[in-house]
Amino acid sequence: MSFRKFGTNDIILNTMKAHPKCEFFIYAGSVYYNNTPAQLGAGKVLVQAVAGGASIGNKTYSKVRNVDPGYISLYEMNIDRPGPLIVYDNGNTIRYITGSIIDKMMIYPFITKDGARASFKSVSTTNFANEFAYGDVLSGSYPLSASITREYINADASSSFNKHYYSLKNRLDFYGIRSDAYKVSSSLGPTKDTQILNMITIPSIFFGSKIKPGTLSLKYYFTGSLTGELRDTKQNGELVQVHVSGATSGSRQTHTGSTAGVVLYDEGYIILTGAWGLMPADTTVVIDAAGATDNLRWINFGVGCNDGVTSGTGLSNVSYNLSFEGTTETQVMTMFAKAKRGQANYSNNPTYLKFGQETLRLTSSHVYEENPERIVANVVSSSYTDYSASFERSVYVSKVGIYDANKNLIGVATLANPVLKKEDEDLAIKIRFDL
Image (spheres, rainbow, N blue to C red):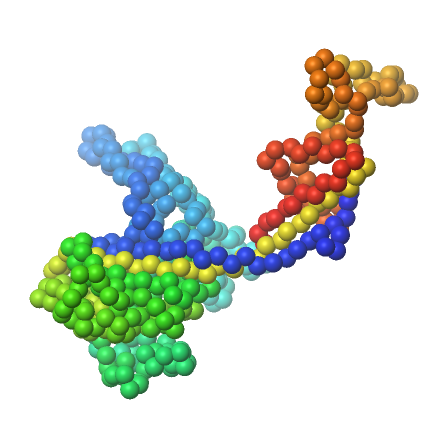
């Protein structure tokens, strides 16, 4: 095997930008991500001990992705795993396996306290020093999950009870150069500090570095019919109510073109302020966990989106759709492994030599000599029947090994189909992988 060094122009680094689409559907207190329903997975058996030494088996089922619908699992660990392992003692008493590490039948992070003093970020220095002895095991749990959430702000938004909005005030004024609709106080209407606000939070794991401007859509449905839609048609963060087919009168048509809120593309926040009624105007639905009700409005969009509302007036009559495209940037390395003519034309594969030849000429306690007259197999095909074409030194390249400066193997690229390399041909294999 011979080594060949990558040339100056054989390695290219670039950035691949993609815009994956995300869609959330909210209905009756449940959230669904990219139309993925709840999926039942492997069962876990829980056994209850009863009088007389008998037992009753109760089977429950875990979720395939180990998270609720509408959630995404970081790294997607513990996919379709059973629940905790249960064992018995002689008295038929249920107990879990005990010890320094609990057997949860799940993948989970753990650190043993030692001289390196490594710990989890969630464990303070004081607790690490005082509450754990050397040799103790600190463990966490998976999955780490995330989903969109809704926060209904129905009071003075600048109060201490609305810290999420309060932390965004400076950012809203900063984006005021895009549109006055961002500003906390502007000539467009009352200050956001006193308005009813509907704030939807989108974790960055869904959109990457930012939400792609011009792709955000919020659709409001009543009994399955589209009542209204908001889009950032201007790509400046304004959420504008667009025309809905069939709406020729009423507030829905009157407010077509009106701004009902703004979106913070980089931070992943949607703040809705549109308080006008949507058709049918006399319909009331629950709007918060306290059970308050109101008509169909944009400030009530997304009820049941992880906001504590799971039941209430009219909740089963309305549904919501939130969709957008994110922005992901992936660093990509492209490498060109080249074999020039006259190079890389020998193989250590046994099929490279003609079958049935003696491998050794002589072997003893003093001498080991291979057969120098072994013949290389001729794989050149001929266009004529019963005619052997002239011999050409040829190999089939199936793998490319990548080594570091110290000749340590750090990667192997496997071709889907072996490539024929003839002695009088140049060959370049393109290898690309994400960093």
